Length: 214
Image (cartoon, rainbow, N blue to C red; front, side):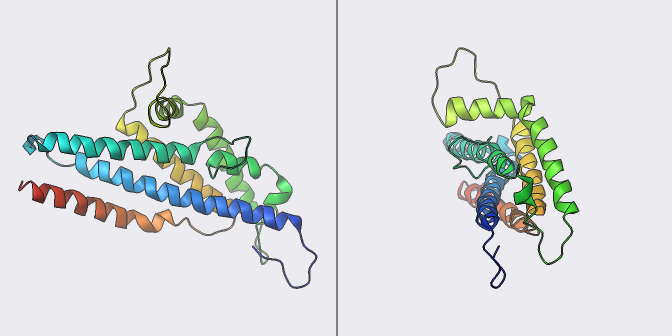
């Protein structure tokens, strides 16, 4: 966002630009997470019964790395705000947008404020419900206990299904879409990458399976 002509500097503009920068970084992380999910989904859509050693172990190693990357990226997108204020996460952005005066800056060129306010209410309600849901708690525990750290915990780290991982990613996409509407930035960039990442995931596994001559 920019100032108009010789209008006195509005201190909210710098804060609004900070929110937009974080949103763009969040959008990119959501797109990266989609790529990891696409690789997992394409692999699991194939007939893996035809795979034999040593390829079973090789595929398992690659899948483990992709899975860790997917969980790490998705949970980073959905993280709550941090007291240091250095996150480009949904929780951090929503915390910044709790200032109604800041939110009022985003509509430009006579755009009505109501759609942005409605999108913010939607995002806040959805996120508040998500972070108290078992879906989020299980993903967060797995990321914290076994991916971001290696923790010795009293309570066993919960098992997380692929359905849970994909559900959390869908939640992140929905929240980013709402936040783009709050900030009047059009549509998220990750939407334009969906077809491409699906295609390249297929190419990746086609190449590997062709190398196995299956």
